Length: 251
Length: 133
Image (cartoon, rainbow over all chains, first blue to last red):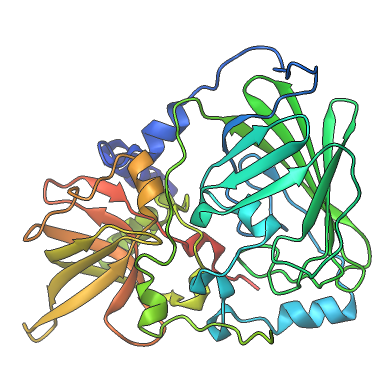
């Protein structure tokens, strides 16, 4: 039976030409080779269009992704996780902001644009963006937001971005791992060569987890891609026809 | 033969596993325990975000033609993988492999398509994040 399965799989993959370019198109791509690029001021330059691993579940490993098994839930966090059912309401289905981690987790690419003062995250998913000061200034004060408040600083050639002041309405990933409004996110970016970014995201949320945990990923420079418009509201039939529910949030 | 059919469908599902969309959780709308195979004539394509939609007429067990609608991946990512809004054309006979919507309507999640010329192509949406807890 194993032989039959392997045979059928090979036949299917062999027949998946043309439109089936997922196998041939993306996997054939080779990023450019070269040294780590730098800005005129000497900082590592993260500019470019980047392919990210799709991470629907941050507790799992995947291609270009090292997950965190056995998430260290607090009792509150475990209850949030065990009682979550996306069928009762998934905010992303209503095109509400994904938040920082879930935006980084999507399969759609992103572009970084960088100056000495700012790093802009341009997410293709829903054409969202967030602009992060990276000149060492402290966090702003203000109302909590979907993407939180991010500031960055340099630790050698690693750019460290800390994000706080989340509104607590988002989920960490597509499968629905929870977090609270006490979430403190640390994202560490380094660029070991021209074609890759090494990315670490560290989740620290004392209400939801007993200790911090992290994912480690590799982002790939896509010189053959350009960012495309993504209007989430354009044809959101599943919401309009009532198959997706929206969580009820208090203002 | 039924076993063979099941294996083929399973392989199509496995081969289509790389998700092309993360707009919403799979389980928010579809049932991972209800795979479906539909063969019929394409009547319309909607090529827009957050998902493409393929409409087709399918004969039921009584020979009555029933309209179906199936949700595919995001057009941006499908474009990068070789699709276009004219990849499927009205009146073409196709076979769709997907999962049924939870609400019982004639709606499915579009995972893979067999084209009139026999080629199998990916159209994947969000199934890999189906909750496993």
